[in-house]
Length: 298
Length: 298
Image (cartoon, one colour):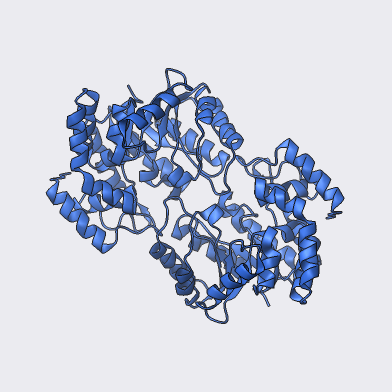
């Protein structure tokens, strides 16, 4: 089931202002070896917004090649619709199993503009599309009604929703509200790792996970029990990672997993595209302590 | 005085998903004929964020060619620092007199990241740089202290600040606050056309103007009296345009001037890059009424 379970978002490591292809391939191979349910290349964690069309096409090819049996979803978002379509074509040619589409914005977008973007893409793409709702980066906020309009388009397979409340009842209310306006075949995947366990317990089908892209086992120790109905165990495991979630909240999950990947020597240092910089020194110190205390191994 | 007075931000009209070079050249020629103090090509109103490197280089060449005696500033912002540097080099090669740099973001940026971007650019550029603070599109908010740090970099010529309060005393307090932390040679230019008159009366040196890019005379009827010390006349003229400012606030200034340019047959229809769409029909109707009532001629 491609749009359910643990979808792992790997970094696209950048070295000397170019994609570190060796490190990226290794990251994807690790995820495949851990049997994640899908790999989502070129998500926000994969820095898609910072890469050229050529770099994105190459990263897509590498992801499909190295993920082997694991389906690969690919981020195709861009500010201009015609660029989105170029990324769609390149992703499909490379063998992507699905497309992740965020309504990137510079000028704030209207609901009609976002709807027309998804309509254009679904009308022209053959691969299924995941609606990528990530207001922290796109600065577009979907209304529940817009979820419904877009999810009704043929070709929409899943919605990646932003962080849910950490309070189970509230999260369940929100998921039920979304479920009521979308077709049954469209899955709901939660993001926002710090409260993802609540999202899964509240009935989400998938976890679109930053953590799983770099530490797939740590993510499995949360989602495994959650899916098996062992709520207390899942919650306890997520709570154990509180020091990590605090850093996610304070510095953005991307900077934190980038630093984890460096610390575990999965990539060189630095690995983010400028002007993005890694964690500041104090946070890096806290992270090292957390990695040791929580026994977070690669 | 290149970084003072009326800087006009022309549209970059898009036709069939390509730059309408003829229409763009005509827009810039009109601005030069009106003796604006500078033309800023590829500002937010010039849709720089949506264009390819090649398109941006071509638009820059056309702007410099058709602006004749009027200095041309060029927007060089991009999400990735190395792309910014490519735009800087192309702008300088084409003969741009200044560079407008907004800290575009996808991942929210830290102050240190933005500072390092401006440091990298000013260290490597020969043309003077305008700090482009436009939180509505970049989603980065400068602190006053960061203005000070960046304005101290050699090569910074001006700061384009967001809309000021429409209340003169408050606007003056804000301008004084900024003035206190930046070197004397760095000018302050106001944006946010609906309250720009207040900004000018509060002591700004320049008006970085969306309106002036399409209706340079209408802008002159505000900034002319403001700079000559005829405050009441300037305010009255700005208040006369209230119906226009209302549409700017409700739909974004870009969509409004794009529709004005269409209505006045300065460009074809539509002229924005997808997924951006023009004004919805009702707003377009209000705009047509306003254009006639206010006698806004091309």
